[in-house]
Length: 270
Ligand code: KIV
Image (cartoon, rainbow, N blue to C red; front, side):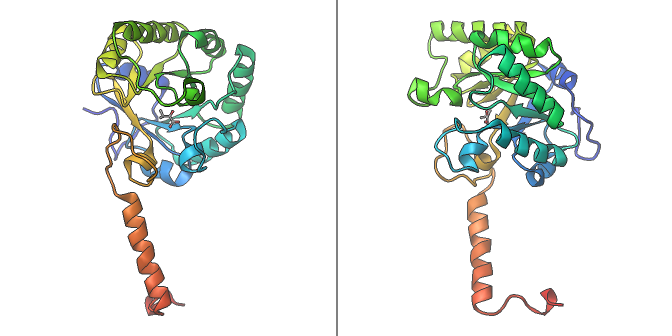
């Protein structure tokens, strides 16, 4: 039996998500505005206001130029549309370089939006920062593996968790993040055996993206999975809809009808 159904959705909390580990796969999707958040709400447990919006919606080459102001604006919009899903705010690059700065920025998130948690990229080197947030009553989702905010420093997007040493490192990172008080962990772009090892090593749920089927849940970027982002499609993205194709076809019909004075017809005229 699912924790929620479309007809009787409940407000999802941090403890709901914790309890789902090993019971029921957690579903998470990104959203950047109220319109789509409302469409997704009640169907998924978690909505991530990802800094991926800087690429898909901002048209930028990576996530690094996303700012606190942008993320706050989009998170407020998402919270207006999402009444049931747990909303996670993705801390943008440069907003959590020290525990003090991270706390100041995460406090803004709680004060200025209804988001229930923040997400932070990084391994055990971020444990102190995560600890500062969790001991100040801010719920944190960690993020390890392929971390898009490291794209320039690592020279590209690289699949992680290849070989025993790298798996061991991911497990150590995951344990440090759990120990620091995070309630969930995004595991991105890793070999499925690494995701499995991480999932088995910690008691908080793992949410995978490009990490195979062994994690406690899955997350995808909505514009990728619904086929709106045409620039590239990573191997792990399953396209559930040809969004771009449908929009283009509908737009062509509109243009055709306007050009041929078929729209507006009587039905759409006062
Ligand atoms: O920004 C984002 O959308 C993310 C997901 C890829 C997990 O961090």
